Length: 255
Image 1 (cartoon, one colour):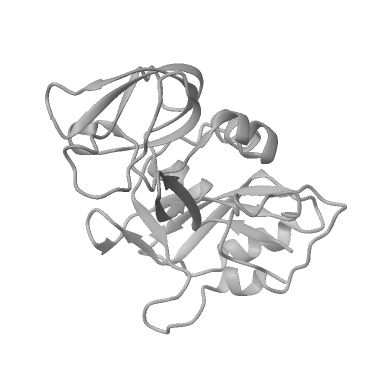
Image 2 (cartoon, one colour):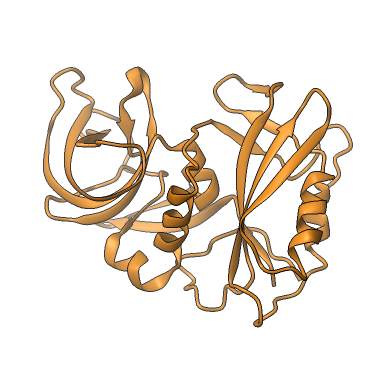
């Protein structure tokens, strides 16, 4: 099956006797929405003097995948913010974190942000490899929109996702591919490029489908569909059999 690493996944975390359900960003959406993506070790957690509802988390950065010179990020202080579902971090933890900007551009980690124990992503997924490719490709823009899978007016499935449903897994090609799309809303035209492809037998077809699709992009911050040329990435997965049930890349299943 070819699956698109594109949306949100379900991950359960227990805090004492409490369990919180969360729909997390998937890799390509999380990467695009984040101002920083780094791996590292938490060195301290302190009250933030400018806002008592936040903790300031200092981090020893091992590797920067997006953003530069990060020294600290912020999480909610559970004692000052309502609800039970917050990231509960510990000094000495080694993590991969995706941080999105909040007020004043502060890098923030929420409960539904994408983050993992570093040992987990080193052994259970190709995530670090994909992030390295994105970094080396200089994919560093940040934007807060989603790509709609169902077109608003027609209520039909996006053409690209619909066509992907006809593809089958092929063990003779790479396990995943990465594509970048630039969509010109005013002209209804797309251009696509291969960052990492599946090979000459499949890539021309995927590029054609990507460029002939009418995309709808919804901006979370403005609550409006974007009207200017917009770039985004899609990570398409050929073989997901090695992934565990707790690390499901996508809600899409293509047969």
